[in-house]
Image (cartoon, rainbow, N blue to C red; front, top):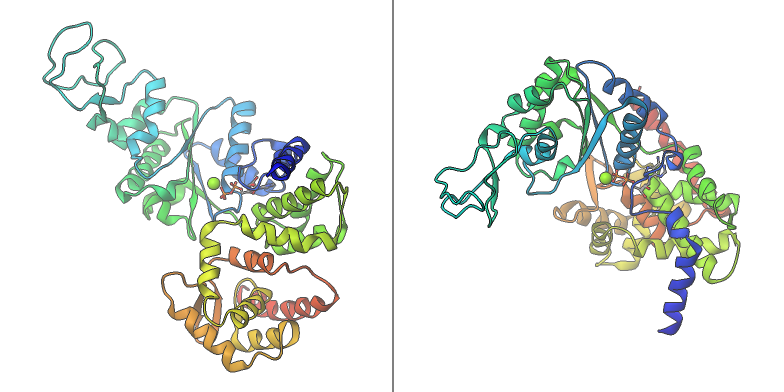
Length: 427
Ligand SMILES: Nc1ncnc2c1ncn2[C@@H]1O[C@H](COP(=O)(O)OP(=O)(O)O)[C@@H](O)[C@H]1O
Ligand SMILES: [Mg+2]
């Protein structure tokens, strides 16, 4: 126990958890790697009359980080008052804008229970007080709901249109009601028609972005939709280089390459693996992080990965455990956008384990595809598959402690070969 506590103290004192931060979005401009194109496009929308913006993409791709930095620039350089609202499941359209309404002198709330004694005035109210300007008659036992007028997008847009404000609505995907998403879209449409200086930046997990605004057609023109994609190798490398420069730690160049590759372009995984490498180095009083140190750090990183990635993987390897693990590793080494059965078999034979029979591979695949609930792999079309969640590719490499050595060059050559199919199909 004492050793555990001592280790924790050592790691805390090293400050590496303030440098590699897999679980919190970037908050300082100089720590954001890449994303220049997206920043410039969103700033242009914010400063263009009638335009608003939406950032969508997978979990961990960097949406909140980008929104944070945009918020800082909007406040520091363009004089916007910024509100960042993180949605939770009981939020509604009105609760999203209530704080702003209040700061503009409108109390959007009203009292739900009507027959209680009010403080000061002594009157028994039979109607809730109307939320005009904030004043007088507050209830002692306060149970608030929102006044119906305030749930109207057109009313909200009208009273806020002259305010130089940026409202960032993050995690819009967790809003339960489609009606509230629609109202948010209508709010944007009204602001746009007013050429308002009140701007909205919507952020959420989505494949297409459209579901975040409940497929509202008429806001297409006024919404700049940014699909956030994995970041490039140079930017991934820079996350480690940047972190390294703030410590005495030195990551071997090959380790930086491996981490960048395993991350699949997800900055979250770069932070997570780099952190685990750094923690081990601190405990072992090393400054150098070499490829020999990577395998154990990867396995540790897997343990700290999101619960649903772990559950999905563990469910997939419940049966025929060893074979399943190897087939999944072969699949993870194929192209991230998908693989043909023939490619999977070839990868398994050349880079993982030729002793596993082709029949066993096919039976794993059909078992996974049938399991709808936690399905790890999806069939795109006959004979063509992909991972349900692209982050599983990184997870599988981490859990297997997979680092690139001379034997895995073959896996890279094959993957490059398979990638030609996707280059052709996206032309
Ligand atoms: N461009 C970036 N440069 C450096 N780190 C990033 C970048 N984007 C995201 N991160 C890091 O990746 C992790 C996930 O980012 P986050 O913005 O929370 O993703 P999302 O909101 O899409 O789930 C965090 O640790 C964050 O610090
Ligand atoms: Mg986020």
